[in-house]
Structures are given as C-alpha cells and as structure tokens.
View 1 (cartoon, rainbow, N blue to C red):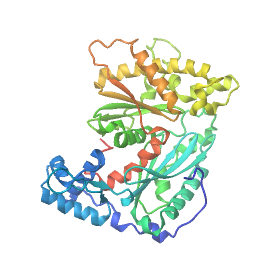
View 2: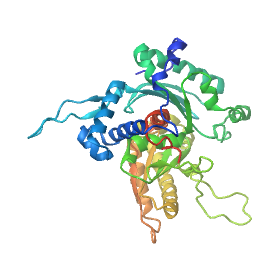
View 3: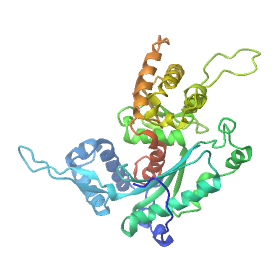
View 4: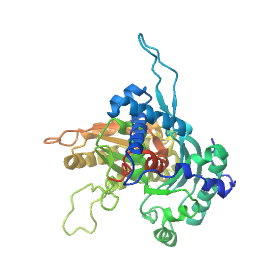
Length: 414
C-alpha cells in the first residue's frame, strides 16, 4: 500500500457512473429493500451464516431470506462460502459480505496530518495515502485530497469504480482552534473558520460526501468494527494531539445538540474558585499527546516519539511515565464523572500511538480508578480500542457505506 500522495487522473465520466449504487433508501423505502439492509447488517455484525440462521436472527421467513440472498448475490453484495457438511441433511452454505461489493473513501483532516483511505465493504483498508505537516494549510490540504480522490479512482479501475459509493470526512469541528499551542498563525486559523469542509470536497466529486467530527468518526469505526459490536452503551476516548471522544447509547452514536456529545477533552479537572483569574484546567491539558510531545521537546528529544514505540524506550521512557501518571488520573476522574451521569456499560480508549503505550495507559487508568469513590454507581469496564490511529478515517469511510446499506440511516446521527 502507498504511504504518500501521487498525481494521477481518471475520466470524470467514470467517476460519475455510479447510478446502480446511488442511495436506495428513503423515508418511504420499500419493505423488501429494508429487509435487504437488515440482512446485510446481520451478516456484517454476526459474520457469515447460512440462510436458516439468517431467517432466525432476522425473524424473516426462509422464503423471504432466499429471495433477498438471490438479489444480493445478483448485485454482488454477498457471496457464498464453501458448504459446511453436518451429520445429517443437506450441507449448509454460509453467506458472507463480498469485500468487492462496495467501496468508500475516508478522509481524516488532522492538526498534524492528512490521511485518505480506500475501504471495502467489509471495512478493510485497501489503500492508505498520507501527508504529514506542521499545521494544515487549506489550499495544500484540499489539493492533496483532490489528487488522492483521483488516485483512488485509478486504483479501483473501470470494473470496481462504479461500486464506489461515497466519501466520508472526519475533522475537528474547530480545526483552527488552539492556535497558540500549535504555533499556528492567526490568519491560518481564521481561514479554517470560514471554510465548509464538506462543501469544498463535494465540489471535487459527484459522489455523496458525508462529514463527522473526527473523534465521533473514530467512535463509529470502533462501533462497527471493534468492541462496539458487543457493548451497547459506552464512552469512547481517543487520544491524539488533543484528547476527544464520542458517546454511544443503545448502539447509536449520540451527537448531541451541537455535535459535541462525548467531548471528553473539555471535562474540568478541578473545582472552580470564586474570584480566580482562570477556570480549572480541562482533560485535554493533561491527557493529550501534545503534552507528551512537550516533555520530549523540553528534554531535547524527538517529539514524534510520542506516536511510536520509542516512547517506552530510553531516553524517552522517564518522561512517558510522568505523562502516563498525569493522564491516567485525569482520564479516571472523567470516567467517574461520566459514569455518574450516564451509567456507562464500558469505556473504550484508543489513540494515535503505539499499542504498547495503549496497554500501559490502560493499566494506569485501572489503577487510577481506585483513587475515586464508586459509592452509588457501578464502575464500568475499561477496554482498549481495536482500530488504532486510522480510526477517524475508517469511521469517515463508514458514513456513506451505512447511508447506502444500513437499515437505520441515522445509526450515527442519534
């Protein structure tokens, strides 16, 4: 897979030729079409299974399931696995999603890098293009996105390109925020405030374009591909340059009135004092990778080590241990506060760092949770995320896939 952008082009007519895969659902979606989506969702969540099991799981008749599977096979959205022979009767034939059944492009615009992923129907990343930067310059970022869209079209080729169903973008709601911390010029920060990101990307393609807050998109990826498949209600915490999160209630992403539900970075870490010049600090001030980078910089070390395996090696590890202690206690306080309000089943923590650092952080958070009182509430389980640093782009890619193929078009918008 590629790890940098390349210039390429594709005929616009080929990109426009996606009529068979245009969104088929609506508020008046037919029952047969709805049932198709129910079946696809069942296979996505529970894995391959024979028609009889699908009928039991979906409460549809075996005849209806047979008709639906035949249509989905004809559309190339599912395929048959090898027959499974039992002791008696005919062998069962498990039905699985066809990875080539549909594709989507996920774009993550971050404060330090741009990632564009090509994701197939089962959620596997087929291609990944990246561009690091000290801060995002709009013209450069959108130029690279346009180049990447063309590259993905060429990669799919004329046979698979018609199965490209949309583009999903994940970005911070305030990409120009915290400009002083990131040493971003005010005019650069203000420029992002005037840009409609979804609209700019939509002007590049005839495909439908979706947008979500970056950490909410990461939460979507965990909801669809990771531990969210077995946990109905959880707080999701994603640690990058700044820490953020998402909230899932009854297997639906809850955005809130302004799209900020689950914005854990804004949790206060202290009691406000009357007459104080400044309010208490927030979680993002203690538990973001920006803080770990600053510790490395003050020690004359490479700040990029905060994102890779060097963070737990000499000479970085001493500073990492100090960051882990502060971050874990701050995260534990936020978990305690959130649980009082939401009665959480679980908390899932992930981030754009090495998996070994995630394991250390989880252990420190579990230890820090002991410092807080759980009287009157039930302590939630704390688990590591399974998707990792690409979660935001992968989650973005799932937005158009679910708009086309999920029975509940508002799965990520509750």
